[in-house]
Image (cartoon, rainbow, N blue to C red):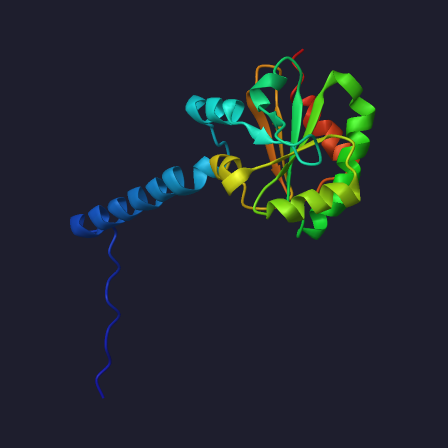
Length: 187
């Protein structure tokens, strides 16, 4: 029998191995910086904000042909509730959003924005739930796409200048809605 002697340990990496590890580290850091990091602090381009502000939105449950532009709401904070008639959590949250609208009165604006839905279904939802705030229809879901709304309900808050200061996905209670709306108030 021959016994094999253990191989001696290397004390450093060969230049080729070191180069490979450096490249792999750079790839991982690059993926983090360009793929994951933007989700933590998304900056919405000014052009997108202007399109959102100027896009006419048909008012649901209102007079035929009535429209609302979010840009017309500047001067007060605005809370926008993205919802759809088929979304169970949206229906539950609409009650909290109605309470919020009652509590803030004229100090802020609350707007419901039906998206990813059929117009008739959204109209029926408004007639049956009777929200205490203006509700509009996102024709072709353009605003939801511009703001990367992928989950319903989603809440967006604009400050007095029309800048989006918060975007929160998933259902929220009344206290959380108040907290978000406070981000829209300038001190």
